[in-house]
Structures are given as structure tokens and as C-alpha cells.
Amino acid sequence: MSIMMSELSWDEYQRRIRDDAIVLLPVGAVEQHGHHLPLGTDWMMATYMARRAAENVNGIVAAPISYGYRSQVRTGGGAHQCGTTNLDGGTLINLVKDVVKELARHGARKIAVIDGHFENRFYLDEACFLAIRELQWAGIEDARILKMIYAEKISDETMEKVYAGGDYPGLDLEHGGILETAMMLYCYPDLVHLDRVKDEPLPEFPPYDMFPGNPDWVPTSGALSSGKLATAEKGKLLVEEFVATVTESLRREFRNPA
Ligand SMILES: [Zn+2]
Image 1 (cartoon, rainbow, N blue to C red):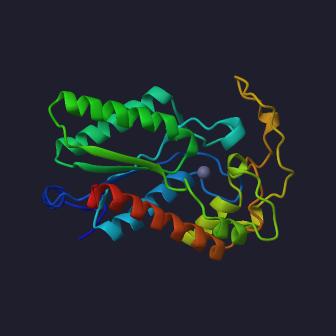
Image 2: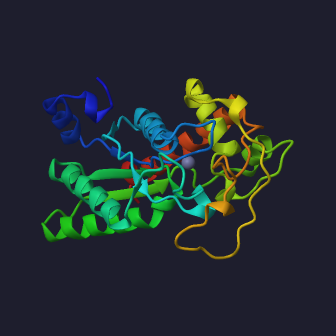
């Protein structure tokens, strides 16, 4: 039987939920990632991670939330390129809160929100907090949500191998850079066009933001660092480490309560 909620009939889904399956909700973004990566990079990677982890814990992947909080100039290149399709913060909070409450209404008690877009972070915190509070008010006291950015932690060993021959630009500048390019090469090779990577100088951002954002701050490609040194092997290292981290986190919180 599929582990993707969207591929299950209602009664199959109900059976899985009643078996106390962990339900993973991927949240991403639709955002430019340079000339070489697709607009769906963030939600596709979040969904990939959720699917792989769900396989390990016999969980279910809820239909993903593809859109995310607005792209920021200094971390995602901003919103000036065509295709970067943002939600307002309040919309994302309400969207995730509603979906989580619906999952719980149908019986899910172990819910994991898997984030693939850095800028979603605090909005997802708020959505999870409000969802739990409203569920408690409604008398559902035993629902719990684990929320994580799948790429929260990278081991030194993997970092050394991934950045061999190049410099780590810092996580903020890793937009469309080696990490994302390598992971996409491993997971969705047909959607990556390495020959289109532009090797532009790293942007030098001031220590503040401007509203409206200034497109001149951002390299013309939209990627904040170069993905030129990305390979599928590096992607495999990263992805398998992240899958293991997500899986371990789910097992720790939902299968072995202290
Ligand atoms: Zn991204």
C-alpha cells in the first residue's frame, strides 16, 4: 500500500491513522533557485525527505504544502524573479494550522512537519503552537507535533567532503548553491541543468534588510552561491544523512517516549 496520503482511498487512510501511523507533512516553497534548478526545489526536497523517512517508520506522507513564506533577499534571493510565488506569513500560519488540525480531527496523534524552506521556520513554529493550543481547547490532549528543517544539522565529515575543493559560503548563501544542487542531482537528476550554473561572485550583503528589497544586491542568476562543484555523490551523502536524522528524530519522539 502506498505511504502517500494522496494515493490512498479514505478507508485505507483511516485504517493507517487508526494504527497510530506517524503523519508527515512536508512544507516547502515555490521559489527561483538560479537557472539550473527548478522552482519546486524546496517542496520537492521536503517531500522526498518525508517519503524516505516515512518508509523507515511505516508512516504516511500527507499531501504537501508546496507554497511557503516569502523569499528574503539575503537568504533566498528575494521575490523579483518570475516564478517566486510567496505566501504572506499569516496565510502560511493559518494554512498549516488548519491542515494539522484536520489531520488530528481524523485521528492522527503523531504529526511531523518537515520544512524544506528556511524562511518558513518561525511561521511553522507559530502554526504548530496554535494548532496544539486549539486542539487542547477542543479536548484533544494527546496530539503532538514534531517540527524540523530536514537540513538542521550536517556532520563535519560530510561538510568536508561536500566542500572539498571549494569554500563553504555559509548557510544563508547556500541558496541554489552546492548543497541544494547536489541533493537535487541525487534525487531528481533530470531536473538539474549543471551546464546552466553561473559562477558569479558571492554577494556582499549589508547587515540589514530593505523594503522593498533591492534586486541589485542579488546575483543576476538568483543563486546566492555557485553550485558548480555539486555532484550526485555529494548529494547522496547529504540526503542519506538527512534521512537518517529525520528518521531518528521521529523514532525518538514517537516510538520511544521517555
Ligand atoms: Zn531552496
